Length: 146
Image 1 (cartoon, rainbow, N blue to C red):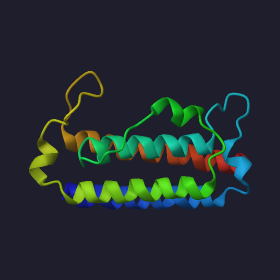
Image 2: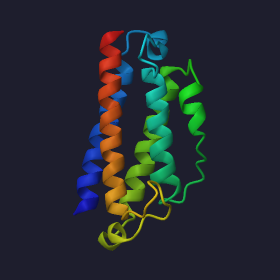
Image 3: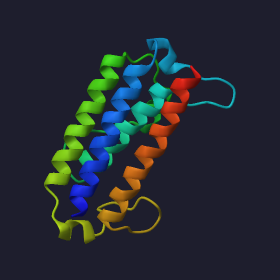
Image 4: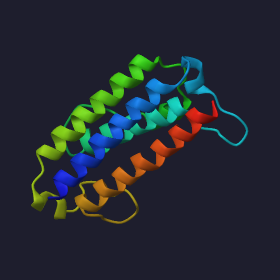
């Protein structure tokens, strides 16, 4: 049951992320910052890709993805097509990982401690879905400001 709910949320929001990235007027707009807006839409996209590919794909799904969190915020100028390919890779890994989890797996403690305390896998994956949605809203707002 939880797997289906999370699958629906991740699939919906990762597809919305692709739509947002595709909707930027120009490549340069993806990377603009201004004043107190220090994270560009492109950097937030890289952050979401890295976050999901690490915590779902690598930690739970056993992929070989290695995260470089610092570069998610310091890299710029990545072409739209590469960002979209990254979102597609994240979506594939997320859905494959969720398909491989049982309801019992969601009740188990997530394999690594992330918030200075143990969480169930279900609770952490729910957090990751809300994290995705939070940054998706920031990207939407950033795109409209540009």
